[in-house]
Image (tube, rainbow, N blue to C red; front, side):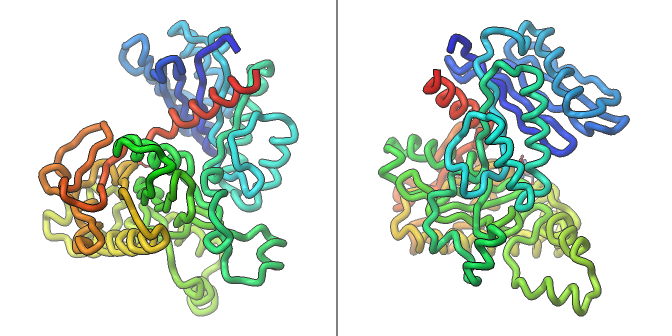
Length: 403
Ligand code: ADP
């Protein structure tokens, strides 16, 4: 392997996010996003980080992912970072669902593509989009190693007691129903970075990671290995999220169908897109919710309380799963920025050794930091996640090993 650059691609159904990194120092050379692929109003936003220039935006129809990646390649070439460069060592792809099969990052070949395809029934929204990105990138650089990094992989270490639902295992196995968990790349990165922040090896610490973005999930990580996580068969289970309900009595679904006369598709849309904070108060952005609370808005205050109550329950549950806890780490958009959420989530948990120091908690920053008082038994930490860096690191390590 001669190159030191890795291109990370995160391909959604109508979007393509990318970053180009130099693995010698993990620096970011360029980053960008193509939105609304397939529409008349597509937009490419490219930031030439290494060149230090302003972001460039281009509007106009981009028909498909193939055209999107070619447009990205052109932008990179303008910065002298073309995808035909020998400096490019590999392309790393985020793949949402790797099922039970993919426990590690994997070099992509036809058999790997076929397996990702076989998982489409359990990830109907995400895996087809991820596959489109993979096919497009392979067509553009067939000679280059391409690596799939799976959101589910970090969670494949969960014991059966955490991964199984309490249903007939024959039915579960026939339909591949079990708890897979998601956001694994972030949970892996943040749990390791938290150990580093504590000055310890990952094997020596137990961490509860709270990834609170638009989607949100918690995980219990013992000695660097995930032993439980809050998302399940799909990313709908667990915490209250921006637009998803999280945990609910499954009988609510029967009730909505039988008594409410709703179709399965309508219920799916209700629980995934019109619930959570948005369903409760009409806003899914925590900044807006805090602003409304400050103005005395009751619906926003109740939505916040429901969100925090669920979060607190998961902290307690994972404390019990782990037995001893060294740190609770908050990450992603809400976890990194919303001090009131952190404060409310651990309020009253002094008996468990958990507290935040108001002064430390109020400080903003983009570095990992501890926000609990020095006297606290358990560190409460804010650890910014970096999924792209984690995908690039795993990709580069794997390609280095194979050449
Ligand atoms: P995604 O799941 O889309 O990757 P992010 O991790 O970027 O999400 O988180 C996005 C969410 O983070 C926003 O919807 C918003 O609720 C929250 N957020 C971002 N910045 C702030 C802030 N300064 N204060 C409170 N919440 C914030």
